Image (tube, one colour):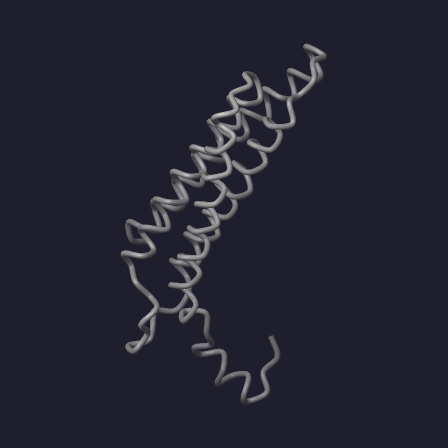
Length: 151
């Protein structure tokens, strides 16, 4: 497993841990303290778990398991993948912190930060999947399928 894959997976697990702790806080807030949960905190929690943890895990595992790029693949670029990692990791963290803050303290200035971080998350997905597109292909299974094997 090479370093970029490890970055995706370890960051994914870090976001998962922070998301689980946030969920625990929300559970205690609602069920023990009998207080409401701000919608912005729910959204921050959901995006940390889904985009930060689940999607970064999928991205890391895809990078690890998908077939190597073909010799003439001009889209696959390890530097672009690393850029997508950094954009995704930083924008997810910024979104979580900004939205978590807005959940408790109204700061209109942070609304633009949240929207900007959301935009950068989409950009990171786009860069990653653009670069990975050529690696989504049949390798050995295409021959077996042609011979009638069912999967």
